[in-house]
Length: 496
Image (cartoon, rainbow, N blue to C red; front, side):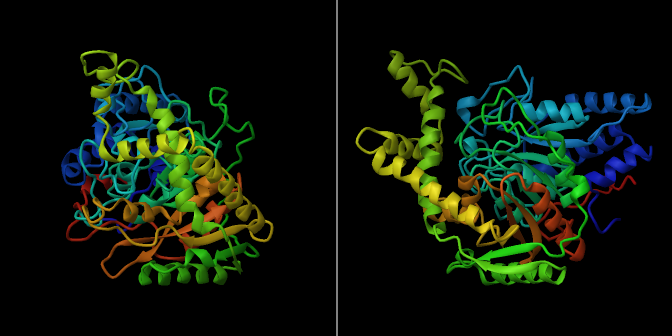
């Protein structure tokens, strides 16, 4: 049996060489999901019939001499992204039974690239959470230790990729929801620049912060998936109408002369010692590979958490107002219209209710300027910190999360402690920068640790290449979760 996971890039090569078929690879993956996902619970919906139909079409296209960037490759999609004909719940009971008649932009792009869609992955309700415990359906478990969380809100996607239940997956990142679960699950997670990928067809949480991202077992895997979904979409007013470069070509592994900034504010009291040690060792490895390390300051970092938890709930309050028992999801009939809305909105879970109330209060008359207005001003200061830093450095290196994956239930009754899990990732969303998490080691319990690399606007190629150089020079990339509490490895995937 192979010591390294079977990656998206390896599968694509095998398909192109005729060494396997998409139907065989897809069926093996579906069999594995049936066998393993009762333990991990990464999927909310498995679209097995659709997947096999798409796999057959992919094989026919290849037999006809066609090719595509992801032709025949099985991929998972976070259940906050619309797939025509498949349930889209956003992890909430209030959207139970909603089946969109259209594909999101990113799903359209996946289909154009020839991908096979295996199913919809679990998420914190409306992407509001850092552990996937806020899903209205069940908690996803970390493949490295089934007693621990996979991170969130894209925990289902991260766990599916880590456990080899998909060759890649889409997630969304509003405050760290791709990067933090990537760190907890030992995979690569990319959050692109705001507007680099269209949000059309993605259930909205906080519209100025949401962005679709990509998970892969390796940097090259995540890059291939990102390449397929990036691009302009006129249906999204925030979509950036700029050319999409060849990101794969940027993975040279040469980072000589790359200026890497290390912010003092990201090595703070409360960070686990093993996390800090691993991240500092990773930064030293970047220097060994030819990068220049520069200490920098992002002085307004300490305001990122309170600013985020004013802006994001305020936008959530506005976005979730449409769930009223009339336009989406189930309708719980009441004595009158007001009672119907009240009864229907009772379907929201505790965290969604908490954020709606926080946001509504922050936007209310008499408090708007004191809270939301001031938060927007401080957000500008945070963004300026990054702009100032990128005048002297190319990349910022820091931890993805202050801790490794925590146990299920440990923070369920302490919202502030839960929110602190994203303290190192929030600023990227507030500043509209790009960032990724790449594995950089393990703690003494065998849990993965992530290195976060942050780039300036539209500088995904730079951070991807830096991550690729680091990954190629170390042993951490593409590791399998082989712990006693993790799912067993299925030999059916060894099809090369």
